[in-house]
Amino acid sequence: MLATRRTILGGAAMLAGAATAPATAARAVAESETSGRPLRILVLGGTRYLGPAVVTAAAARGHEITLFNRGVTQPWLFPGVEKLKGDRYPDIGVGLAPLGQREWDVAIDLSGQYPRVVEASASRLADRVGHYVYVSSISAYRSFATPDVDESAPLRALRREYVESPDLVEGDWPTYGARKALSEAAVARHFPGRHTILRPGPICGGANNDGSGAYWAERLYRGGTVLVPGDGSDRVQLIDVGDTGDFTVLAAERRLPGAYNLVGPAEPIDARAYLAACARAVGREAELVFAGDFPDGINSMPMIPPYRHVPGHATMRNQRALAAGLRLRPIEETIRDNWIDHRLRRGKVYDYAAAGIGVTAAREAEMIAALR
Ligand SMILES: NC(=O)c1ccc[n+]([C@@H]2O[C@H](COP(=O)([O-])OP(=O)(O)OC[C@H]3O[C@@H](n4cnc5c(N)ncnc54)[C@H](OP(=O)(O)O)[C@@H]3O)[C@@H](O)[C@H]2O)c1
Image (cartoon, rainbow, N blue to C red):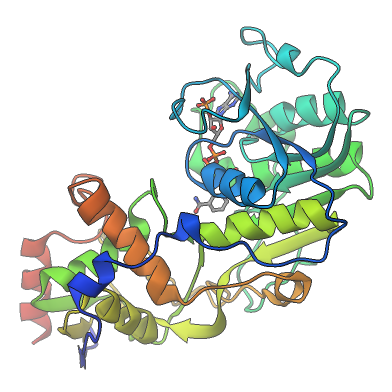
């Protein structure tokens, strides 16, 4: 039996106002106490989603940037930045050879998804780079069975031979967390005491996002009665891409030691508060119907998945990063940016139904009718 609870959300912001919000990429980078000397930063990746935020933040701080990637993803970005064209896989094409004997103060690894790939660059750069920043993920943690996971919690442990088996499809999601955990270990091995591990939660906002952060904003914008999983009390965490980029550069500048969870907002929020922020971001009012547990077959809802039986979901602790200088903008700004990217910059809204995300309008109406 489905539990029903209704609520009305009021949107304060006007859409026209939303459209004129400042772009996150242009946001001023947080002040930090550094030596003031520009760093030579090698960015492994840099051109898809988080990368541009890192490059923009580093450039705004006056650092010298070198990008290393294959020149496939958005190669038109950053024409004024030095680019080395190679492959993280040492056995593909020229591999890592373009790195040559060059030296950098810091490497920021955004593109390492497989332990052997991270191992290859970390071992090659160990004597030529002062500090290595590796962007991992909260998925590296073994369990969310208890709330408030901090950086000391155990990580996933799949056998390396398994996560790198050629039988697995490239990008295989079930092994993602273990691959990140094993990649972290490779970095720690080659840069003992000289590395930062960043573990972001869902990254939202900015341009070229995957659309999940715009799902609820778009649904509320469409209007009508909105079906929501759970009872409104599920926790929601996300982090803005610009804030993540800023902190990544801060970590490089300060050579922050150890691991940092990167999640926001600063104060915990639940699904009800998140949806209220979405409504304000798009300037709409909505009636919400909370559906409790979703029936089988409907289990993919961005940001508010039916994880109510996973007590640790979206309860990551972020105190360590906040104490180290993480700045978090209001989530409404992130949501609006995410949504505007889809509505205005791309000229179309992400096709959630085609991607199997959320419920179709027909199914939603059917379920709401059943709940009433
Ligand atoms: N998005 C999230 O919610 C989220 C959450 C937690 C953690 N993360 C982590 O955040 C990191 C950043 O992801 P991003 O995609 O936004 O980073 P990005 O640096 O913007 O883009 C990925 C870069 O990797 C390069 N690349 C891909 N395959 C390569 C290869 N074989 N050799 C050399 N370069 C290669 C791509 O360029 P080319 O294609 O031109 O080579 C591109 O520049 C990832 O490690 C991800 O796991 C993301």
